[in-house]
Image 1 (cartoon, rainbow, N blue to C red):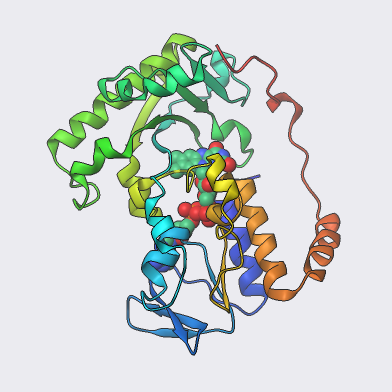
Image 2 (cartoon, protein in one colour):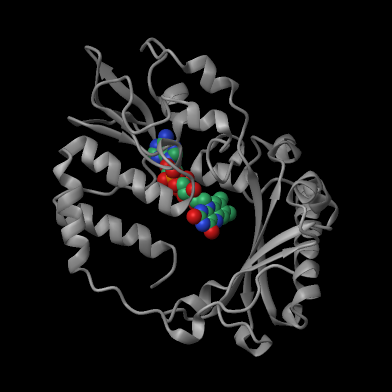
Length: 310
Ligand SMILES: Cc1cc2nc3c(=O)[nH]c(=O)nc-3n(C[C@H](O)[C@H](O)[C@H](O)COP(=O)(O)OP(=O)(O)OC[C@H]3O[C@@H](n4cnc5c(N)ncnc54)[C@H](O)[C@@H]3O)c2cc1C
């Protein structure tokens, strides 16, 4: 229970309880490789932190094309450069003046699609820029969180990162009037798409803020602002170097690029990293510790029961 921040807070507590330190606003600039082995990282501040094992969660491209020095032999750099940017999204974060339960919503997610042909909808994703998204995902985080102090909604759809590339290099929140006009058009279109399915939703909107692939890139550093890591094509699954263990001794890769996209795939990559760093018995230990955890029951009234695709 709790917002997405709870995931980070929980992980940070585990680190500090074990004597570690979590730093924010501390960009790694280089992975230090000496005598053929990863020895630590150099931060943008110039500080060097040495460690017996370095685990990178910055994605495969950042890790192998930016952070590992170019003179460290990696046989797959060119292959990695050839992989196209993954799927990008725009997200409208909405503050609601009162509970969406008034509209009959109980916390379920909605996939509002203009039809069942997913390939056709995907091909039309550019229409989102004109304020006519062919498909949207709608979620109500506050209805899933008993600790929420205000009501919120999120509306997400897919876009091409290339359509935002002309503003690459501009500063966050200072990208200019044309960019703001585009964001307003997209936000209006997302609200209209939801309103068609959920009449009265627009009247609840007290605050709205749209993120674009530039926003995602700003905060995650994923190239092109891709939301779900390297594209999940059949080629990706034949790829033997996108995995936790890297050719550089002492360097492990974690996160969506190391195993599987999404929150669960990323969490599993963390377990695999722990096992790679501490030995296979780690899995057994973590499983028995997980059994001891008390998992709070989800309130029955919040269970999704209505059709999510219309
Ligand atoms: C809008 C949006 C909605 C999503 N919705 C869902 C969903 O509903 N369900 C789901 O399962 N998944 C969802 N995802 C995908 C999910 O968030 C990702 O798959 C997951 O967060 C990937 O985890 P990660 O640890 O690999 O990368 P990230 O979560 O991106 O973490 C990478 C971290 O590395 C940091 N970093 C990068 N470079 C450096 C550096 N040089 N030095 C220090 N730190 C650095 C970044 O700041 C970031 O904190 C969504 C993604 C987006 C963008």
